[in-house]
Length: 81
Length: 383
Image 1 (cartoon, rainbow over the protein chains, first blue to last red):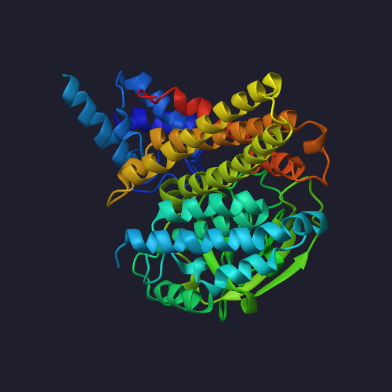
Image 2: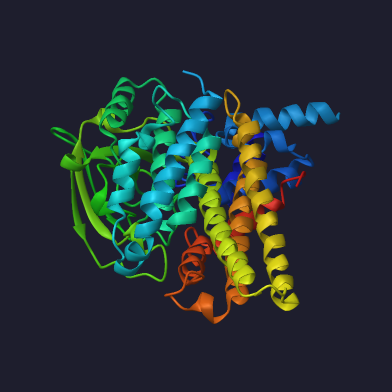
């Protein structure tokens, strides 16, 4: 899953660094992801993992790092299985 | 410190008196000369209105918002300056996070009734407040910055400046923080004159700003978080109250004109038009009140309900709706008043209100807000 997340980040987050090698806890917003780009990341994650983020999870903190995104996706997948 | 109904009422009453006795009689001159409404701001200082939200009175946001609307009925520029100052005060108070320097600063600012301007605009960022070029730059003595701001409202008249900057040289444009610099730490070079269609008393030309200050004057928290939890929703709540005040006064002039011109016999055409304007005003008032209520309901410890995509859409839409509706009311009032409203020298003149209200759709352009909202709508489930 992490590789999928990193691929989406490379496609949509417009980071100043390669998402494949960014630290899992590194702040993606500090690494250049804009609010606008983060929305595109949200859409791509929903499509790729066949999940829907509830509005309460559509927050900056949910998408602030690779680890945070991984945790959120895993939680939604566990809830739907 | 807790908000009291009596404290709120006394504060709003003070501001209403200043609006009526000081702001209103000077409003035409402030507008005509495009000058800073010094007498009104001084009167607000005299009753400690600049610090009301953060001093021992702890006046509520609802009272601050009501005060914005009261001032705007008399002088839009005074009201917008007051609103912008309160946005800076509340931003600092909500995000100082126990930092000793900012705590002491707020006490001093209250004692001296210091007026705070914001420096968020920057030449070269295309109007995107979420991007900065200028950065907090370490120096031997602390830190400094040089920023070319396309507009700073009451920049020449403020005591302190709250500026968006990249966190450090080399940081991404969106990796921003806020720094507070006092006038004696800040050098401003005015770039152009301020001769605008409306909001002329806000005196908002461009400046090149250079400042040097100790690192403790930088707020630690990321500006993006400040924006979402405080600056954007509070701005839109307070601005919309300013626009409501402008619209309410334009309507009142139209009502008085319709009454005066009826000469005992009701002119159906005019009163029908007045009724349409009233409907628009009432809708505007509901929109604005609902926005404030929604902010207060979401402003819980941790502020999580303010930090969602849904919240961003909510308060962006408050701005879109209130700005368009306020202009509609002012235009409607102009139609009711006809030439008596179009002229600048009658008691029914609403030209200033029409011009001032037109700024609402432009200060953070509505087109830009729609462009930001569009993609967010694709992920939000509950609109």
